[in-house]
Length: 225
Image 1 (tube, rainbow, N blue to C red):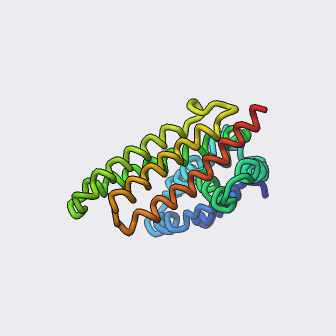
Image 2: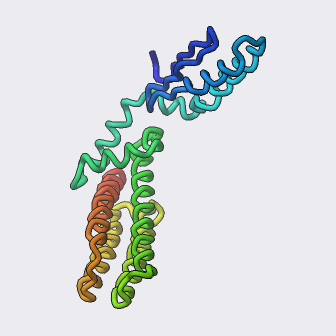
Image 3: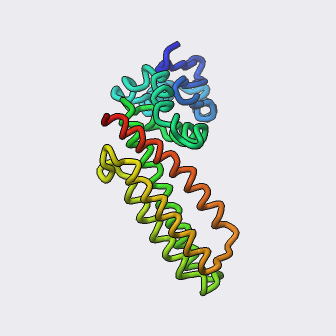
């Protein structure tokens, strides 16, 4: 069975499984059982078959997606090219594979673009985390200036996770500026003796994502040479 094969048991009035081997199995059993309970004993089979057709139509990939999914084995190899220089290979692969767009990337550069976008979003998430602490009612007032600066630092870091910003031969250097922003935040937190338990884990998590961006930037440099 290829990756676009769908199996449907449509008689007697039961749709068991629509199976897309590339991503996962999508089950419509519950929907079908509901239809059976409503229409069993009636002559309204047209409604059932129309519903089955609609489910198939909505859940099949488009033609463009199908072309990209015909060779899913190609994607892990491309991922390996990007993640092999990461400090945490397993984390890099897991993060990139969590985004369906990675599987649709036509080449290594496409995965690099997707990797940078993932880290950009994580940087904004971290910025909002600090912004939330800075504006929290229960936050110690003396901590707030440093927290606000951290929110600004990670917002700046997010702006660097963009292919248009990165220059080919200096991509890793440009991405390193984002790490400088994170270190600036850590320095401010230390100077103001900010003690909030959730902060170290948040920064550590961001650094894991940063390592993905750094690997992507290094890959971009190699593509230019």
